[in-house]
Length: 342
Image 1: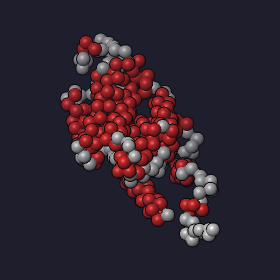
Image 2: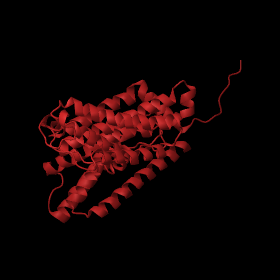
Image 3: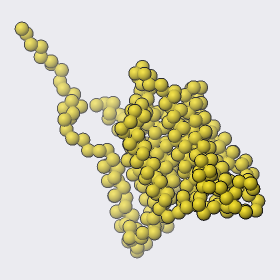
């Protein structure tokens, strides 16, 4: 009996199949460490102080980025599923106003709802989460069932949600929040919330059917549909969770600031998307990890804190941050070309 011998040369992927591959987050972590060391060196050269040896500076940096990080967790899932969400920052503003209006202390004069002051913190938290969830479900439904491009649908929500935030109290801030509510934003609580949420969704993306469906849709929605995945329903779920996390970010932000203002969250969506992309999430969909997004959020915090430490003008900070975002996207496109070539 003749034996058939394949003359097809093994591919590069086949040759490397048995090799141990290092987690992609290691390279991002290396960039983060290099940035810390760079700012440490520049601090001694230009300021005469240490960047890393100031616990208060590092604490403020981590607290500021925890809110962006919560948003980044939501938008990471959206991007992996092949979408985009530009409404996150405006939804934060809307939910901040709604949550704060139900969190005012008892006996406050000129309260938004005079008969609903002094409520248990559960009620304003539930109101804020519900507001964010509704916004996310609207985004997901428009994208999934009316086939409106995600960029346009979420852009419309961005404008509408900011309008709701301004309309809700005629642009007036909401203050006198109860102590039970503001404890959500005190101390290290925002960081704990961020890390708990990141852990939950890291597990969900990596080990559950929800994560497998999300990656499958982002990689090839047609193949996912043929394999039996209800793409429309899952996209509504992904955008709903992103909206829910926007509501959570709005709650944490108002509790930390002890006030609710319509302008809260402005520009946060760009920082959240930047954190995800810097962390290795591909804008083409189907690629990314929650651990990378967490590191990306920390890198953004290091940039902002480091530039402030070096007394770099705010305008130059934005220019440099924009360059970092473009560089991250360019690196993502390079990785995509290499992957297709392989």
